[in-house]
Image (cartoon, rainbow, N blue to C red; front, side, top):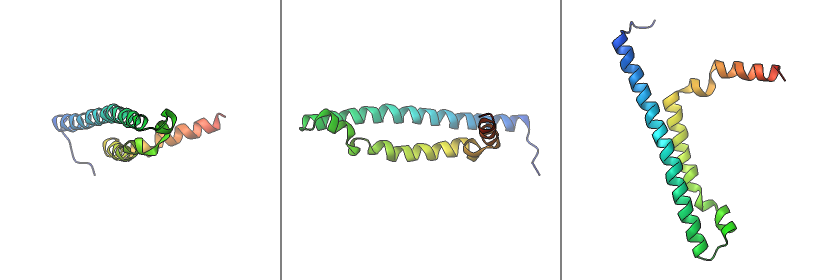
Length: 102
């Protein structure tokens, strides 16, 4: 049984959700900008220390921060958008239609 929610309470809930989404997108932008900058610094440092550009470019250690911070981003996306965003009935129906139309 759903409790009766007034329009004001519903507005407050929606406002909180929009703030969570806004915070997530800011965090995602920071993730891309900061990690891109750090990776560039790490690659430049490796090249300065004698690695070739290709060796520095493919070195895992220059990108591990992307992986670990990415886990946090995925967790935050799951918290922000909820399970329905990842495993919704709408998604299932779209995939079924996609495969049926092939």
